[in-house]
Length: 66
Image (cartoon, rainbow, N blue to C red):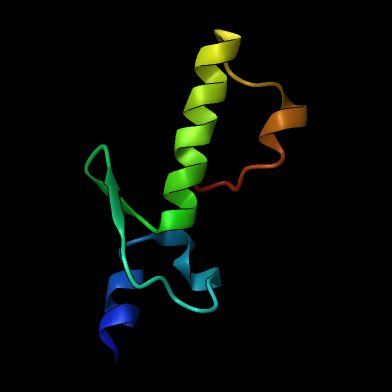
């Protein structure tokens, strides 16, 4: 098993990644692939700008992992 396969196990969404991520980011003590990390940051930005949880029409564009 490659080092990337080992790293990918730390992010739950990486089973869907092709190719596997070569780096992981940490958010609230959770290791995330760069794609999920960027989506978490964007979702948090949207939540703050709206003042509450984004509506379903926005949430549907984010994976369950976000």
